[in-house]
Amino acid sequence: MADEKTYRLKRKMVGVVSSVAGHKTVVVSVTRRVQHPIYKKYLNRTRKFMAHDEACACKVGDVVEIVECRPISSKKRWWVRKRLESGVALDEANVE
Picture: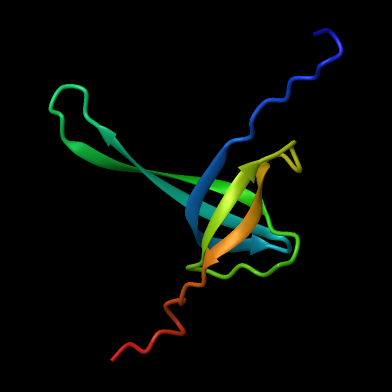
């Protein structure tokens, strides 16, 4: 058992790209539902993560899966694994 290596499972999250923060960097908003401890009402909690996008393929509104990785910069600890859905940005939408 001493020569067997144990690896920590990497966390995965699914969120929406809220902004493109620079070259190869996107900001992903992840929303989760939590229950209030006293009132038992379900609340939406949103948190933003900076993620590394090597291909620069993500646009605002895309649904992506991000995976935990080693620190890339002072704020980036996630990288975009794949794009699940292609979203439509507000400036591209046909708003009448």
